Image (cartoon, rainbow, N blue to C red; front, side, top):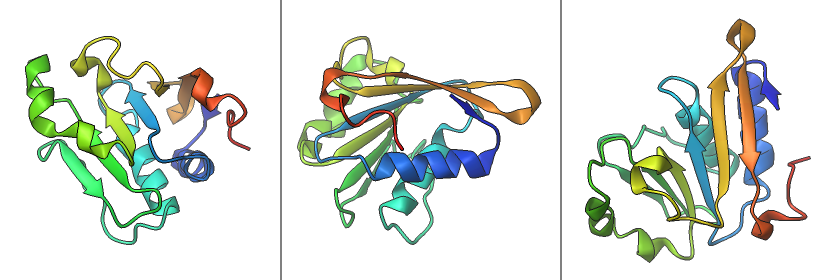
Length: 144
């Protein structure tokens, strides 16, 4: 899928937000500056968050428990050792949606049922989006 500009990224995030359920994990991969956080912001806004959505690069985990479903926005960019993940308490988010940027820092196989989205740079400022869709998303993918 090609997202030609930031407005299309926001629109895709809105459509995806409508499909999220408690317990879902959505991973966001791609190089720095490709729009992972912009997509996460669009999802959070579509779910009703009204304030700023800071990148969780320094906090690592930013919970939005007031949303329905609740969302934990996670940025693993600064994780250097898989053991650090235990300290984040992500298992406490079982009833929330996890939006995870830089999931590769967690090692392979941590979220086998995640909707794995990869963003990459495309021509003319566009972004290409590819998805690895798990069985738990059958019937929900692609977003309308």
